Image (spheres, rainbow, N blue to C red):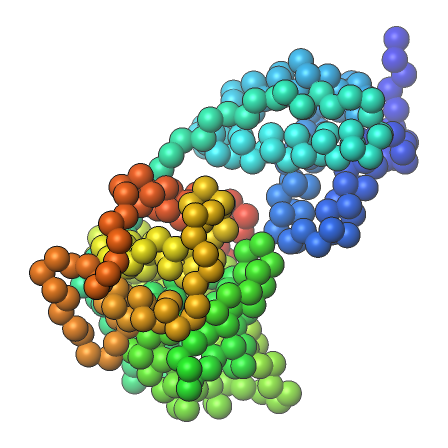
Amino acid sequence: MRRERAPDELDRDPCGLPALIRDFMEWLRVRNYSEATVRSRLGALQRFCAWCAERGVLQAREVSKPILERYQRALFHYRRPNGAPLSFRSQAVHMTGVRTFFRYLSRTNQILSNPAADLELPRVERRLPRAILSAAEADQVLNVPDGKDAFGLRDRAILEVLYCCGLRRKELVQLSLFDLDRERQTLLVRQGKGKKDRMLPIGERALAWVEKYLADVRPGLVLEPDPGFLFLTMYGTALSAAWLTDRVRGYVEASGVGKRGACHLFRHTMATLMLEGGADIRFIQEMLGHADPKTTQVYTLVSIKKLQQVHTASHPAARLQHVHRAADGGAEGAPFLAADLRAELLEQLEAEAQEEEQREPSRHGHQ
């Protein structure tokens, strides 16, 4: 009979799963994986490690393909406290973390063979965004903040930037004063998803609201030394991503459009309206910061000047004055975009939104 070992003894075992998981986390950080990826992998592996420990599987070399398949079935049958199952996307995220872990162990010669080499992940359902605003509905939400109030003016500028540029919430809260180039009408997103920088056009209307915020509101919020963030709280600090989600969701609900969502709702809306305006998918991919080779491999990188032209022609809020498009609704010279590519782009956005919701639940906070 196997002797049961104390938790601290298991933790010290260099061949035990907890120690190897710690080594794997360090390996990811050394190779400059994002902290969000590290946290996601750690959560998946801690869950797997606890499941293995309950069954007396304590070392990586004891894990076999049948054990991994049993764990995969356990995820499928798992129920949350409210009785809801894990989505197939969540199951795939957990199993991807496990599979990556054993590939690392195999490549670093810590196990003789990789038990996860032939493991099949669950097929992820293909979903389109749950809600997308029309141009009129987007304007209805944008008009909710009180522009006469300091925080209302700041929030209107935030909503305009989200709608115009389609930023992720983390990208918006990290914007600095130096990322905005008013003369060239561009916005530099530093270290977006995948730790990649990208240059985006910012429309005239959004730029006008940001400039008004910078002139009338930000000087009263900033505390020396200036932290340099573009948008500040009432305490002169950077916004938090969770606070931003709560704030934007509140404006969407107060608008009466009858749709739910927050920051990603504007990201979905920007992409959809530009598609409907005739923009080529390569320009929308550049705006969104997507790097999926399935949809970008046939295109070359686009210049910021051309991106500005396409953005102005296809985004309904890219100018101060609304400009009616031609009857065909497309930008001049815009190529036809196949329906499957449209659907794939929107599915990527919905998957991204679900992933962000799982990573950080919203929390109420200060203004």
